[in-house]
Amino acid sequence: MQVMAVRRSTTKGFARTASLLQQQIKHAGATRGFAVTRLLTHWPEIAGSDLAAIARPVEVKYGRQGFGATLTILTTGAQAPMVEMQKEQLRERVNSVYGYNAISRVRITQTAPVGFAEGQADFRYAQSASPTPVPPDPAIRQQASEIAQGAEDAALRTALEALAQNVLSKTKR
Image (cartoon, rainbow, N blue to C red; front, side, top):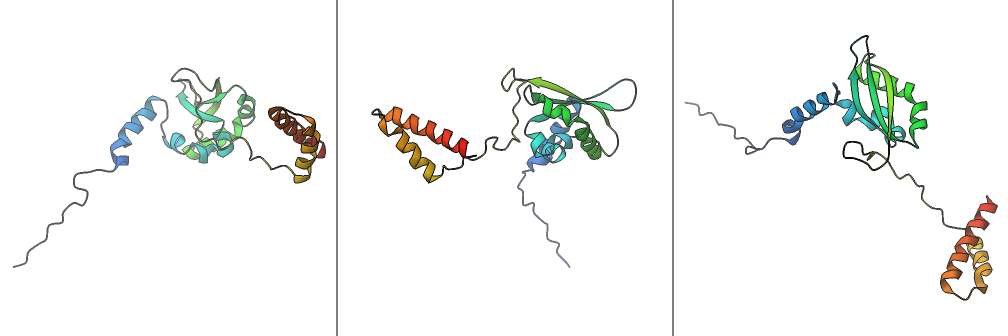
């Protein structure tokens, strides 16, 4: 007589987070107008890192007449002209994700970086916006120190040195 071994579960009753949240994510995406949640979850790959840093998708609305939907993009007021120039390329990228011409129009919504709970522009895909500072040339630093040498107050001397370094490095460019 042959005895069959019963395989025990290694998860001990736990489930993966992705499987638990999948329905909620689909429902939240569908209520916001996103039939394909990939647009939300893979926004930096779809839009590109530079555009994802300054804009994010808000909703997709399907009109009553005609084909195609309207994709609404949220950005700040200062970045809106940059996004406006890239609307057509963005529409093509999004349609390639859908697999057909699902998006016929792209609409841009502007808001301030802080605002009401729904309207906040928090672009977490943004990488460091400011470039890393380049250390000043030692010769320029020495020359700036000589220029500020006459000041007796330490705070004033430091401020004059910084000003001199900025002016000297700018003229060198």
